[in-house]
Image (cartoon, rainbow, N blue to C red; front, side):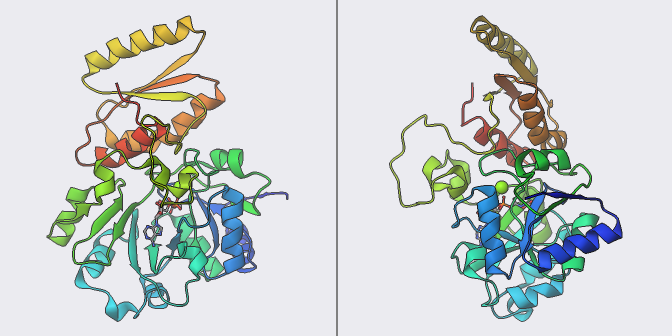
Length: 342
Ligand code: TXA
Ligand code: MG
């Protein structure tokens, strides 16, 4: 199929909205990463997202809305059932890089939520995303617009690298501001639980709510590699784990190694490892964002893709401090390195 390259002008956004309405797939920019959008309420359309991404169909999608009132349709019991915490977060953080998980209504097809009885919803702050959802007049289910396992795309060229010929259209918008995916927060219990960390830190969200937000326990350990459907294993009941098995997620073609510690240690270790690699005829690239989690989030995925295009074999990355905003970026860095830290 030929993939249309659309601009952000109003005619093109109108066309993109029509494509979504008739069941097609459109990649579009958000403030976090590019999404691969389909009508969230159309089973067939959502099925084709899984196909285009090469993603197992039990990995649930995030539903994108332009207006908080759309929750009425998506959430079991409607908006009146939502607690005070949800309204605080909606007021303070939406539109923005926060996804909240709620009990789902019958309107949302099972395929959209991977068979779960909850639905993840996000209101993006990116203007193009907003205009697309408005133009489609439908909530838009959108995973990141990459082939499953690859780094998420943060610019239109990176989307085309994975999706050209596989989807109906790409909106050729701007470079994403944030650069890593939204924080996913489970709001179905008493205590909000971070299921996926993002640029909005646990500390910040706790401040907004005036109560403790916690991390899901899986985020505090090296997770069961086989339990992540996007990593290629659909069967989450399959437990045996082989230590050291490479976790394929956010993976460039090159090997990635994280180096912890001070700037001096990074310099020394990267020189040693680079020299070893050179002796084996391998080319090494170095990524050092200092101690700037915002910059690291903004650049990490696109740097990985760029270094792949340049044909590097090994990428050495300076690890960030895991506290505060660094936590979300380190989550991506660790996965892309298959948890190889020296
Ligand atoms: O920033 C983002 O969230 C981007 C942009 C496009 O909005 N989207 C994104 O989607 O990252 P995706 O499909 O790559 O990741 C969705 C994450 C997955 O970790 C998925 O397991 C989780 O959200 N998720 C979705 N629905 C869920 C649910 N009902 N319960 C728990 N987790 C859910
Ligand atoms: Mg993704």
